[in-house]
Image 1: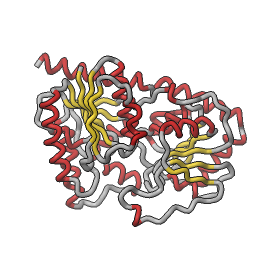
Image 2: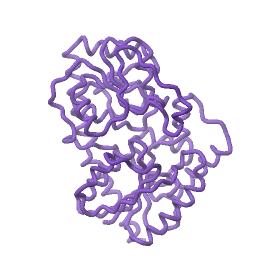
Image 3: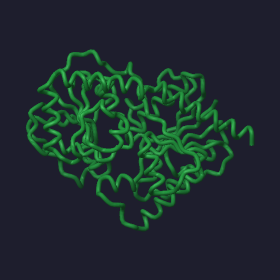
Image 4: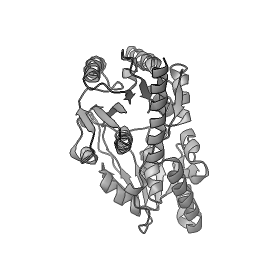
Length: 366
Protein backbone atom coordinates (compact mmCIF):
# COMPACT_ATOMS: atom_id res chain seq x y z
CA UNK A 1 0.00 0.00 0.00
CA UNK A 2 1.22 3.50 -0.85
CA UNK A 3 0.12 6.34 1.47
CA UNK A 4 0.62 10.07 0.97
CA UNK A 5 0.64 11.79 4.37
CA UNK A 6 0.63 15.50 5.19
CA UNK A 7 1.88 16.93 8.46
CA UNK A 8 3.32 20.05 10.04
CA UNK A 9 6.50 20.64 11.97
CA UNK A 10 5.10 23.16 14.45
CA UNK A 11 3.85 20.96 17.32
CA UNK A 12 2.89 17.49 18.49
CA UNK A 13 1.49 16.50 15.10
CA UNK A 14 5.09 15.99 13.98
CA UNK A 15 5.71 13.42 16.73
CA UNK A 16 2.47 11.65 15.79
CA UNK A 17 3.64 11.64 12.16
CA UNK A 18 7.00 10.17 13.11
CA UNK A 19 5.32 7.20 14.81
CA UNK A 20 2.80 6.64 12.01
CA UNK A 21 5.28 6.90 9.13
CA UNK A 22 7.87 4.72 10.87
CA UNK A 23 5.24 2.08 11.64
CA UNK A 24 3.85 2.02 8.12
CA UNK A 25 7.28 1.71 6.56
CA UNK A 26 8.24 -1.04 9.01
CA UNK A 27 5.11 -2.91 7.93
CA UNK A 28 6.25 -2.83 4.31
CA UNK A 29 4.19 0.09 3.00
CA UNK A 30 5.47 3.03 0.97
CA UNK A 31 5.03 6.62 2.17
CA UNK A 32 5.34 10.07 0.67
CA UNK A 33 5.38 12.64 3.49
CA UNK A 34 4.70 16.33 2.89
CA UNK A 35 5.25 18.83 5.71
CA UNK A 36 3.85 22.35 5.92
CA UNK A 37 4.31 25.35 8.21
CA UNK A 38 8.06 25.60 8.64
CA UNK A 39 11.06 23.72 7.37
CA UNK A 40 12.18 21.25 10.06
CA UNK A 41 15.36 21.74 12.03
CA UNK A 42 17.91 18.87 11.96
CA UNK A 43 16.85 17.06 15.13
CA UNK A 44 13.26 16.93 13.83
CA UNK A 45 14.28 14.78 10.88
CA UNK A 46 16.89 12.55 12.52
CA UNK A 47 14.31 9.75 12.79
CA UNK A 48 14.17 9.55 9.00
CA UNK A 49 17.71 8.25 8.68
CA UNK A 50 17.84 4.70 7.35
CA UNK A 51 14.07 4.59 6.71
CA UNK A 52 13.81 2.81 3.38
CA UNK A 53 10.76 3.69 1.30
CA UNK A 54 10.22 7.21 2.64
CA UNK A 55 9.83 10.04 0.14
CA UNK A 56 9.94 13.28 2.16
CA UNK A 57 8.85 16.63 0.67
CA UNK A 58 9.29 19.58 3.10
CA UNK A 59 7.52 22.87 2.28
CA UNK A 60 6.90 26.22 3.98
CA UNK A 61 3.27 26.75 2.99
CA UNK A 62 1.36 28.41 5.82
CA UNK A 63 -1.11 26.30 7.80
CA UNK A 64 -4.85 26.85 7.64
CA UNK A 65 -5.08 28.23 11.20
CA UNK A 66 -2.44 30.87 10.52
CA UNK A 67 -3.38 34.41 9.62
CA UNK A 68 -3.28 35.37 5.93
CA UNK A 69 -3.06 31.73 4.84
CA UNK A 70 -5.61 31.75 1.99
CA UNK A 71 -3.08 32.06 -0.84
CA UNK A 72 -0.83 29.42 0.72
CA UNK A 73 -3.75 27.02 1.00
CA UNK A 74 -4.61 27.41 -2.69
CA UNK A 75 -0.98 27.09 -3.79
CA UNK A 76 -0.38 24.06 -1.57
CA UNK A 77 -3.51 22.41 -2.99
CA UNK A 78 -2.10 22.78 -6.48
CA UNK A 79 1.22 21.43 -5.23
CA UNK A 80 -0.50 18.37 -3.76
CA UNK A 81 -2.55 17.76 -6.90
CA UNK A 82 0.62 17.68 -8.98
CA UNK A 83 2.35 15.47 -6.43
CA UNK A 84 -0.57 13.02 -6.38
CA UNK A 85 -0.41 12.78 -10.17
CA UNK A 86 3.33 12.13 -9.89
CA UNK A 87 3.46 9.46 -7.17
CA UNK A 88 -0.03 7.91 -7.55
CA UNK A 89 -0.69 6.84 -3.93
CA UNK A 90 -3.43 4.43 -2.89
CA UNK A 91 -4.58 6.50 0.12
CA UNK A 92 -4.37 10.16 1.11
CA UNK A 93 -3.92 10.93 4.83
CA UNK A 94 -4.29 14.63 5.66
CA UNK A 95 -3.42 16.24 8.99
CA UNK A 96 -5.03 19.47 7.74
CA UNK A 97 -8.71 19.97 7.05
CA UNK A 98 -8.29 22.12 3.95
CA UNK A 99 -7.11 19.26 1.71
CA UNK A 100 -10.15 17.08 2.32
CA UNK A 101 -11.95 18.64 -0.66
CA UNK A 102 -9.24 17.90 -3.24
CA UNK A 103 -10.82 16.61 -6.44
CA UNK A 104 -9.60 13.02 -6.62
CA UNK A 105 -11.00 9.51 -6.55
CA UNK A 106 -8.27 8.37 -4.15
CA UNK A 107 -9.68 7.69 -0.65
CA UNK A 108 -9.08 10.63 1.72
CA UNK A 109 -8.58 10.41 5.48
CA UNK A 110 -8.71 13.73 7.36
CA UNK A 111 -7.41 13.73 10.94
CA UNK A 112 -8.96 16.24 13.35
CA UNK A 113 -5.98 16.90 15.61
CA UNK A 114 -7.48 20.17 16.89
CA UNK A 115 -9.28 23.27 15.62
CA UNK A 116 -9.52 26.96 16.39
CA UNK A 117 -13.18 27.06 17.47
CA UNK A 118 -12.94 24.33 20.11
CA UNK A 119 -9.58 25.77 21.21
CA UNK A 120 -11.11 29.22 21.62
CA UNK A 121 -14.11 27.91 23.54
CA UNK A 122 -11.93 25.90 25.94
CA UNK A 123 -9.58 28.83 26.58
CA UNK A 124 -12.03 31.75 26.59
CA UNK A 125 -15.29 30.08 27.60
CA UNK A 126 -17.10 31.10 24.40
CA UNK A 127 -16.89 30.70 20.65
CA UNK A 128 -14.80 33.23 18.71
CA UNK A 129 -16.45 36.34 17.27
CA UNK A 130 -18.04 36.04 13.85
CA UNK A 131 -15.33 37.84 11.89
CA UNK A 132 -14.64 37.50 8.17
CA UNK A 133 -11.50 35.49 8.90
CA UNK A 134 -13.36 33.14 11.26
CA UNK A 135 -16.15 32.59 8.71
CA UNK A 136 -13.50 31.77 6.09
CA UNK A 137 -11.81 29.36 8.48
CA UNK A 138 -15.08 27.59 9.36
CA UNK A 139 -15.95 27.25 5.67
CA UNK A 140 -12.50 25.85 4.89
CA UNK A 141 -12.74 23.27 7.68
CA UNK A 142 -16.31 22.31 6.78
CA UNK A 143 -15.47 21.79 3.09
CA UNK A 144 -12.53 19.59 4.01
CA UNK A 145 -14.59 17.50 6.42
CA UNK A 146 -17.38 17.12 3.89
CA UNK A 147 -14.95 15.94 1.22
CA UNK A 148 -13.24 13.34 3.41
CA UNK A 149 -14.08 9.64 3.07
CA UNK A 150 -13.18 9.18 6.76
CA UNK A 151 -12.58 11.65 9.60
CA UNK A 152 -10.36 10.42 12.42
CA UNK A 153 -9.80 12.10 15.79
CA UNK A 154 -7.48 11.16 18.67
CA UNK A 155 -10.30 11.23 21.25
CA UNK A 156 -14.07 10.90 21.35
CA UNK A 157 -14.25 14.41 22.79
CA UNK A 158 -12.49 15.83 19.73
CA UNK A 159 -14.87 14.06 17.35
CA UNK A 160 -17.80 15.48 19.31
CA UNK A 161 -16.34 18.98 18.96
CA UNK A 162 -16.19 18.59 15.19
CA UNK A 163 -19.85 17.61 15.05
CA UNK A 164 -20.76 20.45 17.42
CA UNK A 165 -18.95 23.28 15.64
CA UNK A 166 -18.95 22.23 11.98
CA UNK A 167 -21.09 19.37 10.68
CA UNK A 168 -22.31 15.83 11.31
CA UNK A 169 -19.76 13.43 9.90
CA UNK A 170 -20.70 10.70 7.43
CA UNK A 171 -17.84 8.42 8.49
CA UNK A 172 -15.85 8.89 11.69
CA UNK A 173 -13.45 6.98 13.92
CA UNK A 174 -11.47 7.50 17.10
CA UNK A 175 -7.86 6.32 16.91
CA UNK A 176 -5.81 7.13 19.98
CA UNK A 177 -2.34 8.46 19.30
CA UNK A 178 0.55 6.23 20.33
CA UNK A 179 4.20 6.26 21.28
CA UNK A 180 6.92 3.62 21.14
CA UNK A 181 7.63 2.58 24.73
CA UNK A 182 11.26 1.66 24.01
CA UNK A 183 12.02 5.34 23.32
CA UNK A 184 11.63 6.04 27.04
CA UNK A 185 13.45 4.97 30.17
CA UNK A 186 11.13 3.87 33.01
CA UNK A 187 13.88 2.37 35.18
CA UNK A 188 15.97 5.38 36.22
CA UNK A 189 15.93 6.53 39.83
CA UNK A 190 13.42 9.33 40.31
CA UNK A 191 14.04 12.63 42.06
CA UNK A 192 11.50 14.84 43.80
CA UNK A 193 10.91 17.18 40.87
CA UNK A 194 7.80 18.09 38.88
CA UNK A 195 7.91 18.33 35.08
CA UNK A 196 5.55 19.92 32.58
CA UNK A 197 5.89 20.16 28.79
CA UNK A 198 4.04 22.83 26.87
CA UNK A 199 4.38 26.16 25.11
CA UNK A 200 4.66 28.77 27.86
CA UNK A 201 2.98 31.41 25.67
CA UNK A 202 -0.04 29.22 24.86
CA UNK A 203 -3.01 29.75 27.22
CA UNK A 204 -4.38 26.36 26.15
CA UNK A 205 -1.34 24.57 27.60
CA UNK A 206 -1.74 26.74 30.72
CA UNK A 207 1.71 25.91 32.12
CA UNK A 208 1.81 29.36 33.74
CA UNK A 209 -0.59 27.93 36.31
CA UNK A 210 2.48 26.25 37.82
CA UNK A 211 4.04 29.69 38.37
CA UNK A 212 1.11 31.34 40.13
CA UNK A 213 1.93 29.97 43.59
CA UNK A 214 5.11 28.98 45.34
CA UNK A 215 5.91 25.34 44.63
CA UNK A 216 7.44 23.23 47.36
CA UNK A 217 9.00 20.85 44.84
CA UNK A 218 11.36 21.99 42.06
CA UNK A 219 9.38 22.46 38.84
CA UNK A 220 10.83 22.28 35.31
CA UNK A 221 8.89 23.49 32.26
CA UNK A 222 9.95 22.50 28.74
CA UNK A 223 8.66 24.53 25.79
CA UNK A 224 8.90 27.75 23.85
CA UNK A 225 8.50 30.86 26.01
CA UNK A 226 7.40 33.17 23.19
CA UNK A 227 5.06 32.59 20.28
CA UNK A 228 6.97 32.03 17.02
CA UNK A 229 6.71 35.07 14.78
CA UNK A 230 5.71 37.37 17.64
CA UNK A 231 8.85 37.27 19.75
CA UNK A 232 9.41 41.01 19.51
CA UNK A 233 5.90 41.75 20.83
CA UNK A 234 6.13 39.59 23.96
CA UNK A 235 8.01 40.14 27.19
CA UNK A 236 10.22 37.48 28.72
CA UNK A 237 8.51 35.25 31.26
CA UNK A 238 9.59 35.79 34.86
CA UNK A 239 9.54 32.43 36.62
CA UNK A 240 9.05 32.09 40.38
CA UNK A 241 11.76 30.65 42.59
CA UNK A 242 11.85 26.86 42.32
CA UNK A 243 10.50 26.99 38.73
CA UNK A 244 13.01 26.52 35.89
CA UNK A 245 12.15 27.30 32.28
CA UNK A 246 14.21 24.91 30.16
CA UNK A 247 13.09 26.11 26.73
CA UNK A 248 12.48 23.69 23.84
CA UNK A 249 14.24 20.32 23.92
CA UNK A 250 14.89 17.54 21.44
CA UNK A 251 13.28 14.14 21.91
CA UNK A 252 16.59 12.72 23.16
CA UNK A 253 16.94 15.49 25.72
CA UNK A 254 13.33 15.09 26.83
CA UNK A 255 13.83 11.37 27.33
CA UNK A 256 16.43 12.08 30.01
CA UNK A 257 14.30 14.75 31.69
CA UNK A 258 11.28 12.44 31.83
CA UNK A 259 13.43 9.62 33.20
CA UNK A 260 14.32 11.51 36.38
CA UNK A 261 11.13 13.49 37.09
CA UNK A 262 8.89 12.00 39.75
CA UNK A 263 5.66 13.80 38.83
CA UNK A 264 4.32 15.11 35.54
CA UNK A 265 1.87 18.05 35.70
CA UNK A 266 -0.58 18.59 32.83
CA UNK A 267 -2.54 21.82 33.48
CA UNK A 268 -4.01 22.14 29.95
CA UNK A 269 -7.33 23.87 29.41
CA UNK A 270 -7.47 22.40 25.91
CA UNK A 271 -5.94 19.09 24.88
CA UNK A 272 -7.57 16.97 22.15
CA UNK A 273 -5.18 14.19 23.13
CA UNK A 274 -1.82 15.05 24.70
CA UNK A 275 1.30 13.07 23.78
CA UNK A 276 3.46 14.51 26.57
CA UNK A 277 1.48 12.77 29.34
CA UNK A 278 1.86 9.48 27.44
CA UNK A 279 5.61 10.01 27.26
CA UNK A 280 5.69 10.83 30.97
CA UNK A 281 3.65 7.74 31.85
CA UNK A 282 5.96 5.53 29.78
CA UNK A 283 8.79 7.03 31.85
CA UNK A 284 6.97 6.07 35.08
CA UNK A 285 6.03 9.56 36.16
CA UNK A 286 2.90 10.02 38.28
CA UNK A 287 0.35 12.14 36.40
CA UNK A 288 -1.32 15.19 37.97
CA UNK A 289 -3.81 16.54 35.45
CA UNK A 290 -6.31 19.31 34.91
CA UNK A 291 -9.89 18.21 35.34
CA UNK A 292 -10.77 18.32 31.65
CA UNK A 293 -12.91 15.81 29.72
CA UNK A 294 -10.15 14.47 27.44
CA UNK A 295 -7.82 13.58 30.30
CA UNK A 296 -10.68 11.79 32.05
CA UNK A 297 -11.54 9.92 28.85
CA UNK A 298 -7.96 8.79 28.31
CA UNK A 299 -6.62 8.20 31.79
CA UNK A 300 -9.55 7.45 34.13
CA UNK A 301 -8.27 6.34 37.55
CA UNK A 302 -4.64 6.29 36.37
CA UNK A 303 -4.16 10.01 37.11
CA UNK A 304 -4.72 12.49 39.92
CA UNK A 305 -6.99 15.35 38.83
CA UNK A 306 -7.12 18.92 40.11
CA UNK A 307 -9.78 21.57 39.51
CA UNK A 308 -9.33 23.33 36.19
CA UNK A 309 -7.50 26.68 36.49
CA UNK A 310 -7.08 26.23 40.26
CA UNK A 311 -3.40 26.64 41.22
CA UNK A 312 -4.10 25.96 44.89
CA UNK A 313 -5.72 22.60 44.15
CA UNK A 314 -2.85 21.78 41.78
CA UNK A 315 -0.31 22.42 44.54
CA UNK A 316 -2.36 20.34 46.99
CA UNK A 317 -2.55 17.35 44.63
CA UNK A 318 1.17 17.49 43.88
CA UNK A 319 1.96 17.73 47.59
CA UNK A 320 -0.26 14.76 48.42
CA UNK A 321 1.72 12.56 46.02
CA UNK A 322 5.06 13.83 47.26
CA UNK A 323 4.11 13.14 50.88
CA UNK A 324 2.69 9.66 50.26
CA UNK A 325 5.18 7.43 48.37
CA UNK A 326 2.82 4.44 48.32
CA UNK A 327 0.00 6.50 46.84
CA UNK A 328 2.35 7.85 44.20
CA UNK A 329 3.62 4.38 43.39
CA UNK A 330 0.06 3.19 42.75
CA UNK A 331 -0.62 6.01 40.32
CA UNK A 332 2.73 5.46 38.59
CA UNK A 333 1.93 1.81 37.94
CA UNK A 334 -1.60 2.52 36.69
CA UNK A 335 -0.46 5.26 34.33
CA UNK A 336 2.38 3.08 33.02
CA UNK A 337 0.05 0.15 32.34
CA UNK A 338 -2.56 2.41 30.74
CA UNK A 339 0.04 3.88 28.38
CA UNK A 340 1.43 0.44 27.49
CA UNK A 341 -2.04 -0.98 26.77
CA UNK A 342 -3.91 1.93 25.16
CA UNK A 343 -1.39 4.36 23.70
CA UNK A 344 1.18 2.33 21.77
CA UNK A 345 2.43 3.20 18.30
CA UNK A 346 1.92 -0.42 17.24
CA UNK A 347 -1.79 -0.29 18.04
CA UNK A 348 -2.22 3.12 16.41
CA UNK A 349 -0.51 2.06 13.18
CA UNK A 350 -2.53 -1.18 13.00
CA UNK A 351 -5.80 0.75 13.35
CA UNK A 352 -4.83 3.15 10.58
CA UNK A 353 -3.80 0.24 8.35
CA UNK A 354 -7.18 -1.37 8.92
CA UNK A 355 -9.00 1.87 8.12
CA UNK A 356 -7.01 2.35 4.91
CA UNK A 357 -7.81 -1.22 3.83
CA UNK A 358 -11.52 -0.74 4.48
CA UNK A 359 -11.55 2.46 2.39
CA UNK A 360 -9.72 0.73 -0.45
CA UNK A 361 -12.14 -2.21 -0.30
CA UNK A 362 -15.08 0.16 -0.71
CA UNK A 363 -13.43 1.79 -3.73
CA UNK A 364 -12.81 -1.60 -5.36
CA UNK A 365 -16.43 -2.67 -4.76
CA UNK A 366 -17.74 0.62 -6.18
